[in-house]
Image (cartoon, rainbow, N blue to C red):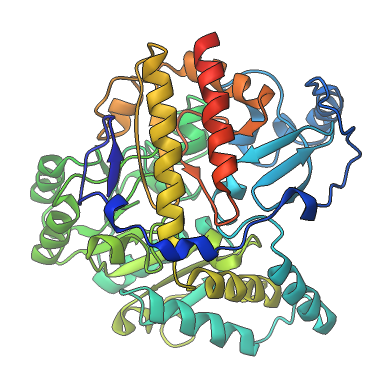
Amino acid sequence: MASVSGGVALSCPSRLSHRSSSSSHRRHVSSSSVKMAVSVDEKKKSFTLRKSEEAFEIAKELMPGGVNSPVRAFKSVGGQPILFDSVKGSHMWDIDGNEYIDYVGSWGPAIIGHADDEVLAALAETMKKGTSFGAPCLLENILAEMVISAVPSIEMVRFVNSGTEACMGMLRLARAFTGKEKIIKFEGCYHGHADPFLVKAGSGVATLGLPDSPGVPRAATFETLTSPFNDLSTVEKLFEANKGEIAAVILEPVVGNSGFIAPKPDFLNALQEITKENGALLVFDEVMTGFRISYGGAQEYFGITPDITTLGKIIGGGLPVGAYGGRREIMELVAPAGPMYQAGTLSGNPLAMTAGIQTLKRLKEPGSYEYLDKITGELIQGILDAGKKAGHAICGGYISGMFGFFFTEGPVYNFGDAKNSDTAKFARFFRGMLEEGVYFAPSQFEAGFTSLAHTPEDIQQTIAAAEKVFRKI
C-alpha cells in the first residue's frame, strides 16, 4: 500500500516506484467535450446554492430528511445538501450552475468517469431490446465470466441489486454452509443496512451519531460480535469465548466507511489462519474495494483469498447492482442449486450488466491502475502537505483509486482512532472546498475516490484549492 506522511499503517511497500509510463495513453474528458445541462455564464459566477436550498425545502416535505440515503443530508458538515443536475468525466454541475471536481464518484462506481461515452452508447443499444426481462439473458453470463476470472476467491457468483442485498445473501450463505449462527464484524465497517450488521456500523450511522438503529430487535444482532479493526487479540478472545459457534469473520479489507483505514501488516493473513483453525469462513466485503484498488480487488492486492466475497458499485458501472460469490462448494448451496433461498426480480438486469461489462473492459486496459495510483498519490500528498504547512493536524493514505484523510495527528488504525478527528474542522474544510469547486464526501468518515477521467490539472486545481482553504480555517 502507498501511505503518505500520515497515520495510516503501511501494509505493503509503496507502489509509487512502479508507476507505468503507459498511463499517458488514458482517455481524459476535455473541457470542450463536456456538455453542460445547465446554462452557466463564461465569466466565473459568485457561488450560490439558492436553487438547491429552495428545492431541498420542498424535498423535506416529500422524503424523510429530504434525501433517499442519510449521508447525503450534510448533517455532519452543516448547511443543506446540493442538488445535482448533470455529471461528465470527473466533473459535476448542480442546479445553480456551479461546477465541481468530484471525488465521490457516486460513492465509488464512477471509476472510469461519469457518463462515459462508450458506456452510454452500449446502454442505448441495450435499452432498444428492453430494460428488464425477469428471465435469464446472455449478458449475465458475460459479466459473470469477467468477475470469476478477475476475483481470486470467486468460482461462482450470484448477482443482486445492491451491496446491502449482497451482504444479506452472503450472511445467510455463511450460516447455511457452516451450520453456525454467530459472526464477527469490525467496528466502523459497514455492510449495508440489514439488521444483523447495524452494530457499530460506521458510514452514515457514524455520520449521524447513531450507534445502532431503532427498530432493530435484539434478536437480530444477538449473534453479531464486534472487534476493533486491526485488533487481532480481540478476535482471538471472541473465538475462545464462542468456541464452535462462529460462522464467519466479515470485514472490509480496506475500510472505507469510517474513513480510509488500511489493514496492518499480516492482519488479513492472521484472520485467514484463525478462521481456518476454527472452521469459520473469512468474508471480504469488497463492495467498495472490488475492482478499485486492483482489478482483482483487495484480495489480489494483498494476496489473501477469502471464502466468500461481496461486490457492488463498479461491477454495475453506475447502475444498481450487487453480487456475492465464492468457492463452488459454498455457492452450490444457493437456490435453485441448493436449499439456501435468495431471489430478486431485477437481479441480472440487462442495463446493469451492460454498464458493468463496459466498465470492466476499460479497467483491464494497460496502465489503468498505474494511472489511478499516480494521480491519487499526488492528490493525497498535496492535501497533507498543504494541511501541515498551514499548521493543521492531519494524516491520511491511499491505495490506487481510493484515499482518505483525517483531521488528527494519527495514526488511525480503527474507528476509535478515526473518532479522534476534528469533525468541526472537517466541516469547515468541506464547505470551503465546495466554494472552490471541489466536491468531497460530506463526512469525515467516508473514503474518497479518483477516476481515470481525473486529469493532472484536476489534481493540481484541487491541491491549490486546499491550500487556500487550509489558510482560511
